Image 1 (cartoon, rainbow, N blue to C red):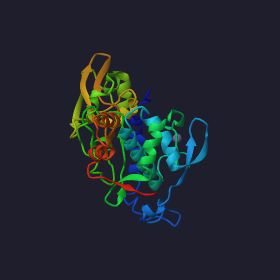
Image 2: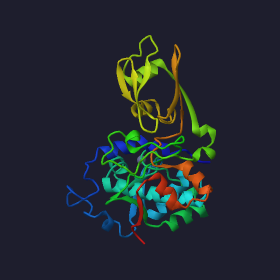
Image 3: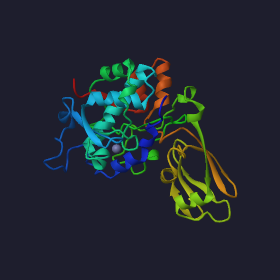
Image 4: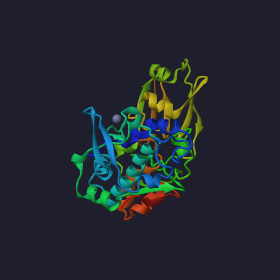
Length: 318
Ligand SMILES: [Zn+2]
């Protein structure tokens, strides 16, 4: 069974990205201990990376490709079409290298290149691996997504609810801008289990007030004050206070308040009932969308070109 892990990537990752200087990745303003100016040279051969095992409390070292086999096996259902698994492999390879380039996420938390917590980077479950997963990683060996001179922020989430979020919608303050994280139709509904596609969260008013840090007052005064281009809520207004939808989602729990693609808000005396679509930040690769496209016969390159507009696939190591 799929473990619905990718959506947890959202806030922590971007908090790490946003905190980095704009020049990160271009090799500027880095000390002698930093990576070479050209990240392509740094990764001309497959790196061996350090992986902190969050459930055991120590680190192991693995060649990148072996690590990725465990990531793809955990982040997607290993029985999905191989073209979708291959897209996940390229996305996860790119994201891991982007973290290493920026020195963010696991490096800050554990002092390692990667870890096994989906809340910190990506899930890792080598025991779930099968022949299709191994083929997906092997056939895409060394391949990453780039845009211009840079590795992209290869974001992904479980399901985008029919339309992906722009980078700006999903991660306010994303720097540098990521035009390849555009809003595109995502066709995953046909294959997304209804329990993962539509969600409902009843939030007691006291809890909402606590999360927002503002009283709701006696009237039913929670409203949406800003929408993004894909229809996601960017900002709520509670009484006189505004709060970013992504912040409210993080405060209430991203497994419970699964997306900012809100379809209704019902207010009762004691609680506010949110319903929405999709699971995760919704930007970049939609995993269920990739599953659906692959089942329709799309090749990996076409799937990636759809979700990362204008990005290219490059091979770093042979
Ligand atoms: Zn961790």
